[in-house]
Image 1 (cartoon, rainbow, N blue to C red):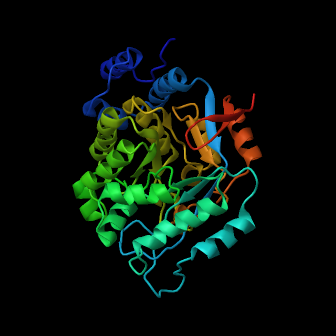
Image 2 (cartoon, rainbow, N blue to C red):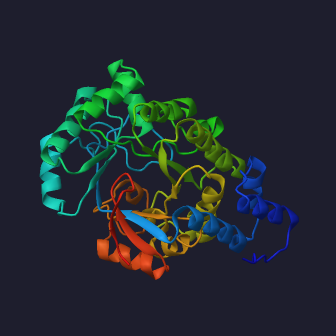
Length: 367
């Protein structure tokens, strides 16, 4: 295939040779790609890598996002979801209240509950365990994907248990995989400036390492578009790549586009489509040992998700039903989407929609 280069460039050509020869890209390569304005070449290279890994298949799942509590001890600067105890709009649902909510909104195709929430110190660790157990008993055929690595670290602190003991307790209650959140940007400087007063870099990685050692396949994210440098974005990917070399436990990498605090925020307060596509494509090129890169339509919109499917993304997320965290922060996208719309969206990008379960087993191919 002939490479389209809008600005013929020796370093870009060297990176293209590396990609095509299956050689690993360096920190310097990743930063160069971020600084380059040649989005078409970057996207084309990422597309080649994705086609090599996944063909034209794009995966999605019928899932529901659930939030047991929004009360949180952390005060991360970017979060508009959290509340203090007693603050207007704060809540903590009992397991029975959550079951009533799910009964009202679930439909027969749902295969996964995606569960995250606040670090609520007013309830014990056992509350979080019972929340999982109650859902698994009520909906035994639905996979429980619950809690971020930062939440697992929080549970360890409030219970006095090790990460391994926390995870084993949750697994016995029905936990089957961890969500990817809590990573934000894996940089000490970033975490200090953004008041990320929860699991640090080593703790985030160690929770996932421990989960992988216990046999869980997990997910991981990067929240980009605020104060971090381009070097910090690429270094974040290298932290994840190094752990994947060690454990091979990550199923998918999810670049999350930072949302402004208000839905009325101007376009100048939002990441550009150009930056969002770069995040997808460069993730695909840097993370050679992770099978899937997700285009998260909640943050980047459905039409940009279609474009991302030709620039390295092989996962279009899921139906969600009702997303709250990004929308609390000002997302303008739909809070959920139907299976029919997802199939249409993927086919519209010239790809083959594949309905999957949590672990990327294929349920149905929509030729």
